Amino acid sequence: MSQRMQQGQPMIIMGEDAQRVKDKDAQEYNISAARAVAEAVRSTLGPKGMDKMLVDSMGDVTITNDGVTILKEMDIDNPTAEMIVEVAETQEDEAGDGTTTAVAIAGELLKNAEDLLEQDIHPTAVIKGFNLASEYARQEVDEIAEPVDPDDTDLIKAVAETSMTGKGAELEKDVLADLVVRAVQAITVEADDGSHVVDLQNLKIETQTGSPAGESELLSGAVIDKDPVQDGMPTDFESANVLLLNEPIEVEEADADTSVSIEDPDQLQQFLDQEETQLREKVDRIVESGADVVFCQKGIDDMAQHFLAKEGILAVRRVKKSDLSFLKNVLGAPIVTDLDDLSADDVAVGSVSRDEEDGLFYVEGEDAHGVTLLLRGSTEHVVDELERGINDAIDVVSTTVSDGRTIAGGGAIEVELASRLRDHADSIEGREQLAVEAFADALELVPRTLAANAGLDAIDLLVDLRAAHESGDSRAGLNAFTGDVVDTFDAGVVETAHAKEQALSSATEAANLVLKIDDIISAGDLSTAGGDEEGGAPGGAGGMGGMGGGMGGMM
Image 1: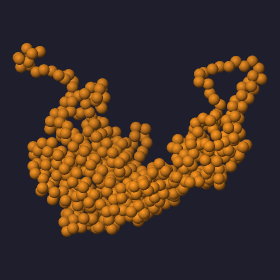
Image 2 (image 1 turned 90 degrees about the vertical axis):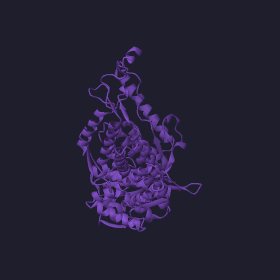
Image 3 (image 1 turned 135 degrees about the horizontal axis):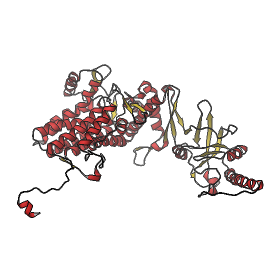
């Protein structure tokens, strides 16, 4: 080998079929992939944002403008693009809303970074500048933010309405926002240190089709969308002993396949009698525990149903696991997994009632620890989108109550931060100053996109917004419905400070992660595009084509 090297022949490290993209080509490729994802959801931003129709391989249709839902459902076959999708997922997990904003800012940061790279500014300088800008911007968000009291219903309701605007919940946002605020306040407790904690485990969302969204309601306790196992069973109890069961009330099956030879009818009758005895014993244990109502996650045999009905016990089978867990919170009762160990201590007292028209059971504990938000809509698509919007609103309101800080929406905070960052950039030496200014420009993508999605002139409005902020109006934002520059905080367009800080942090980290890559190398089994397939890339060139095709089908 040394002799070959002395003769000037190259050393072959990678196979002939290995693919590799290096230096500027790798950076351009990664930035293009990330920007493609950001641009895919940008048109959904704001109260005038458009919806996307997602069609999966089975033909199922989802219509939504929820950023994280769109990105999760899209058929993306590119590792760089998947990194941007993770931004949305992180934003959703940490803040509950602002996913589209986080992804859009990440894409714009990379676009501006590409211009700096073309000026021969090293990626390390860009990354450092972005980090400096992000840290300073988050500090300024905290300074600008205004405190909110958990009992300030009007302000918290404005936060909920802002989150719902532009989504499926917007049509009845006044009613729904009130329900969301009441629901969050019902499950908020004050900690020993004086902070407020929202326990979302005590909130359940149920959906029902056939009614307008305005008929949605907040109910104390749990709602179970099931029928009694027999029509003759009692359905209403003011004070009932309720048993939560995760064991079938059925004949125990043999572990292995067996066959039995029967020589006369008496033997068959003995088998039937034995099964009846087993079921009778199970029911007797339930009766001895004092239970009046049984919610069972598993099945209930027909004969056991008959025995339970004779004892005047209400039984409901095939209850969802999530419903059973929520009933546990509402009633303070354990979930029994073995009837042999059942005792009177395993039942809890609560009221049970039946709404025959809606086909729902309402269950409430003596000291109710849970509430149910019953969402109604005309069709499945409407209800599904309504539920996504309500989930975001609940998360945002919960964050606001826990965090205690709010900011003006409508692009106001982004324009103010951009102005402060440009002033701050003068104090930064070196090429990082240019990256800080690029970061400021990227933040202004939000008001520009809000204006563009509303069919307004983005440039003129951005000029007006900058002028308003230069004159000291830090809460000046865009009214997308009238096209005017207004004090958005007073207008009721209010966002949570935590969501904005998280969006800035997530977008910066994702952009820097992409910028730090200067080489894409075939990695065999590590390939995300299928290593054995012909033309499969290391998540490289082949991946980009796959993503483009998948996105083309969605857009």
